[in-house]
Length: 289
Image (cartoon, rainbow, N blue to C red; front, top):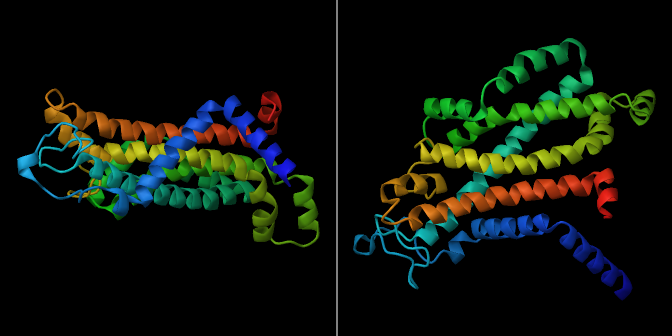
């Protein structure tokens, strides 16, 4: 038992040294997720509490990240903003991935006119439009709010997952094990969920991890434009928008939210790269993992 544990620790240490960016990504994501989940307990102040006598204070012991123009504690708003970004990113990726699996799975497995209709008139139509512009248009039409923000981002992001799923399904739908299951009388749903989906989940997971980073950036962009969740909810994008007027006299108002967005995005991108390297046998062989 001790030998097995020691061997596992050596393997983990070898992976960390050979993939330092993956280790950094895990640390960044651990910080981001911990801050989001534990925000009610670790935030030192109420993120919406206004204290005009304490407005625009530089970082200090009482306020480690300073205060904004209304005297609100920046650190508390950053922590609660992580919670908001985590909720939005997880919800949007879940909805987009579900739609992508449904539409891409149908197009790739059935083929024929179903594939033509779904690919030409659904996927290509949404992929032809820039995702962020599509999200801005829907957010402006629906109005600000959590539900509308999630719908706007999901509408602009599902087509990429559908395209990936379609390509992966088409690559494995005619394999021998699928033909054997079909010959034994298995139905289409059983074949897809038992034999096709487990063999295409690896690239989908990588895409989902990278997609989380894109959603965080898109949410910050929409909030910066005033199309995200309305005030006084703390959002990193809204904090950057509020800090524009104090860019030179109070640069920490821009620095801390920008570093939070960059850290979360880098964490998910590094995680996606690590998952790709870990799940690809050829890459693992080249790296000696």
